Length: 422
Image (tube, rainbow, N blue to C red; front, side):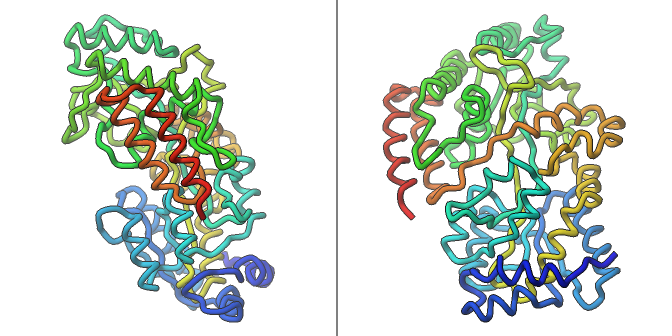
C-alpha cells in the first residue's frame, strides 16, 4: 500500500527545513524535504534485525519502484557511533540508520548531521515516553524505535544447586543473601558478572538500571544537573561495591558470556537475549532489586534502546520520511517484535500485540517493563558525561580505590560543568 505523499510533503517542508550540513541552505533543505526517489538505509548486523530489515525493504520496494530503498548492515568499525560520526563528517551518511544510539544524538546533532523529525507522529506512536528523546531545542532528532528493558535473568539449575528453589531478589539484602549462597555452595563461581571494563556504556548494565529503579525513574542528568550523587545513587553504588568486595562479582574482564557458560548465576540483560539462551540456560527473570523491595509494577529500568534517525546528507527526505513511517507502522513493529523479541517503543505494546504475547509468554514480562524505562539523558556532551561517571564508578565501586561518596560527588561536579556546555 502506497503512503499518501501530499500531507507529508507539507509537514516535512516545515519540520525538516532546519537541517544542518549536507543539505546546504534553507532552500536546499526545503527541496530535500519534498524530494522523493531512491534512498539508502543502514541497519544493525544482528541476524534477526537483518532478516526483519530485508523483508521490510522488500515490502516497500514492491510498491515503490521509483523510490527504491537500498539497505545494508552498518559498516564494521570500533563502534557504530564512530562509523556514523565519520560518515557525517564525510557527508556520505545514508538517509536512515536503524541503529542510532540515543547517547550519540547530541554529538551527531552538534555535527549538523541530523534532520529534525515530525513530533506529532513520534508522540502519537510512543506516547509520554517520547519526551525522554527530545533534544534541548525542543525538537526530535531521533525516532524512539525499540527497547530492551533490562531485568535480572537467573539460572534455575544453578540456584537449585545452591538450595534456592524460589528465589526472592527484590531487596538488596535478599539479592546479597542469594548471591552468597550461590558462591558459598560453589554452584557458580560468581553470582553475577557485569562487565567491569571502563567503556562509557558499561554503566548501563550495572549502575543505571538499579538507579532507575531506586530513584523512581530518574535519569543520570536532569535539568542540567547530575542526579547520581544523591542518596539513591550512593545506595546503588554501595550495593555493587559489596558485590565486588565480597567476591560475588568479578573485577576481571571475562571473554565470552559468563551467564551462558555457567560462570555466573545471574545477568543484567534485556529480551533480545532470550533467543541466545534458548537450549543453553534454564532461566527465570525478575525485576532489578531496590533497597526497599518495590513491587514489580513500580520498578523502572534502563531501556537499552536503539532509535532511527534521518541524516542530513539525505537528498530524498520525502521518501526517507515515508519509509521511516512505513518501517515503524503497527504492522512492521509487529513483524519486528516477532522476529527479534525486542519491544517496539510504542504505546500499549502488551495490548497491541496481545496475540504474540499469548503465544510467547516469556516476553510478556518485558512488555510490561517496557512501559517503565529510563533512557540516557539527551544532553550535550552525553558520552563524555557517561565516561566521567564510569571513571569514578570504576575507581570507587569496582576496584575500591576511592570512597564512593567522594568519587560520586566529584564526578557530579564535573558532569554539571559538562552539561552546561553546548
